[in-house]
Length: 250
Ligand SMILES: [Fe+2]
Ligand SMILES: [Fe+2]
Image (cartoon, rainbow, N blue to C red):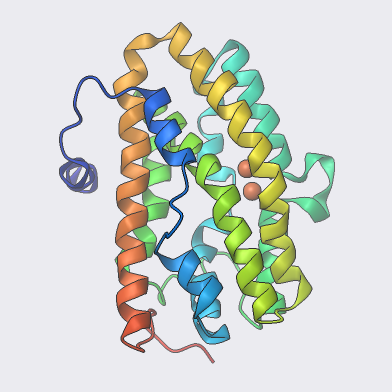
């Protein structure tokens, strides 16, 4: 309750004329002169800063797909079928070596980092925990299914262009191939996922339950608010030449 109240406070009031389609369109438009961690990593960051970024993201990517999977039993019809089709890809489409969680574990190992689940729980600040706790909160309560769907849509829509910048960053650093591979996989897969989620998951869900529209919008904005907090923390730390972690990496 405390966390949710803080998230609501951070998101603020949402005008009643804001639509899910409008929000998804907004997320699809990439600024020409964007700022934030993925731009910084692409153009300026050191390999050590990149490793810090992996550590922050490891809390989610080592269980990628799982927090959103709570949504499966809360959907029906086409929305459910299409949502499961996207999750099928997240879970490797029948191939254990292709499970996105495994691809991220391979990335961690290649970067000389611990790939055990929650291995860096004590190393990351609250900003990194909040992005993960938000999706678990939405997924664990049926009444938040609209917000969970919105959160999932925001994740998929922003992933492809962000991953594209990560590929460029890692190639600039001559990073090990498993590191590049995780993000390269997401450039193409999530461009497809975005369309499926927009039209067949959110579209169908709101046709069935139009009253969920404000919740979908809230889920999208809550995703943005928590990502922004983490981005602020990373940029403040890195531009001041400080570690963004609570303890040094070896
Ligand atoms: Fe993925
Ligand atoms: Fe995806």
